[in-house]
Image 1: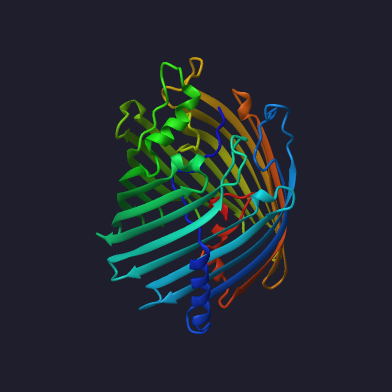
Image 2: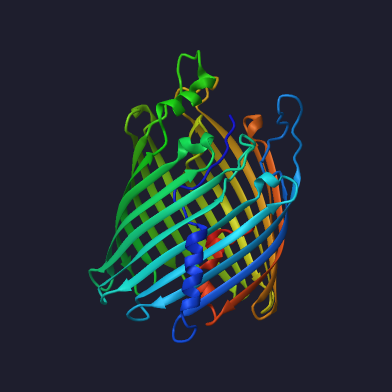
Length: 451
């Protein structure tokens, strides 16, 4: 089976050009004095991408084996952010965004614009009541898996959320939340997976005097496949004409996750956090697609010294996948990250990932008796950065990945190496980090836990 794309259940938003221009206008409109945080980042990079479409080993076009090409990629990015106090320093509006372009020198069909814009309103009404409202949208290149798709596709994301924190006592807080997300693809072949999700979450959290915390709650969501119609489903049924059974594509499913979160601050050097959840998914039409999934991640951070930080993650999580034969992917893995601050100007980082994934077939897909196919992934990454002078940073980033599976289409290799220079203007030191502008960058060698 040709699995083309997978992404995590919890989406992260990125952007559209007109909204980014509105953000730039806001930056110009506000004076850099007072307590407003202002950030402007500019980045240019040059990289090499081996096998960008992720063709599997030995894949053919019907006539000959497809060669795994190496392409040179030029990148340019502009990122910006502003913090606008509304009533006080605790109640504020945070606007951030990014706009970038990628130019492929060999396969120019992959040239594209990418970026994101987010608005986050954080409010404090009293010592007992606070919350936030956030919206965001964006676009980025389709994440190819193993050569099943050889055309450029762009993903468009939108999200929104409302969170409230009600302090019942000094130690206990009630945390209701509403959320919404939307995902759309440009190519008609992928629009079977266009979807909208809305849901709600209710959690109860306990904070200890030492800074540790525990939380339990429930998360309920409904996902609708907005462009799934009979004609489109018939197109995906074509490979199974004449079969006694056919794949079944539903238009909606509902999920309920009961979860438990914990963070344990063992010492000033060591912090451990965990998320453990059980997910029940029910489809609106085809009940035989219903499934129960686990969603767990354990993360430990050890700060050996002010210069060296070590992170270890263990996870067992489900992912959706853009493939007409796969219902979902369940991945179990281990990830290790290290960050070494060699000096005030020079730092290095490395990472290693080992992951086993099981791709579960949609009922009705002919599989020679199997219900799933498994793959094993090994990936390493290396990065470094050097601050030439205040605001100017040279950086290098890379990853090297090898996948092996039960079927030839899962045997994939890919690597990316990137060199670049970044300029950051901050009117207050640390503003870029406080606004988390790193989330817009194409990090290859680090995970979100250590950015």
